[in-house]
Length: 220
Image (cartoon, rainbow, N blue to C red):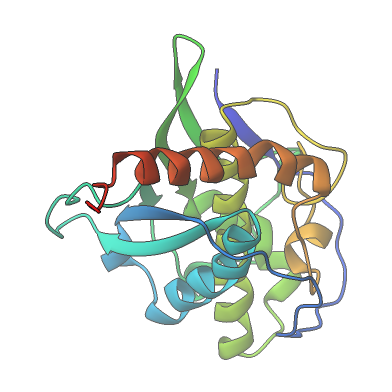
C-alpha cells in the first residue's frame, strides 16, 4: 500500500500571492533530498517547488538541502535523507487542457515495505499535468510554471510528512489531508495543521538530540 494523494476535482479561478503569514519555527534538523528526473523538468518549475517547500519544512523543524541524483552520496552529516523521483516532464508547457479528467488521480506517493514508509517518494507529472491543465491553461506561462512548481512542493511536503513522521494517518485539513482538490493546489496558502506538526517535529528534535550526544566532549 502507498501513502498517496487521491485528487478530487474542484475548479476555481487562480490568484497568486507569494506572501506567508505563519510563524516559521527554527529549523533543527538537516534533510538532504536527492532528486531524479529534474533534467526533464522546467528550471522555473523546480525553483517554485523548492521555494514552496522551504518554509513548510522549516516550520516542521527541517532545513532542506537539495541535490541531484548525480551528486556525490551524502557525507552522513544530514540526519535525514529522502530520494525523490519526478516521473515524466514536470513542465507547464506539457499540459493538455482538453484531456478528460478521471474521478481521481494519484499525483504523488511513497514506497512502503513491512509497515514502514520508506524514504523514496515520487511525483507523477503526467497526472499532475492532467489535473492542473483545465484550471491554469488561461494563465501566462510564468504564472503556470509558478503554480505548477508550487503544487509539486505541496505534494512532496505531504509525502515527506508520511516519511518523517512514519505514519499513514492524515489530518482533516492542510498539507497532510488525505485528498487534494484543485482548490488546495491553487490556494495562496496551504500549510501543515498543528496535529501534523506534532507528528513531524519530534523526528527533527530526536535527530538533533542524537547528533548532540555523538559530539565529542571538550576536556576541562
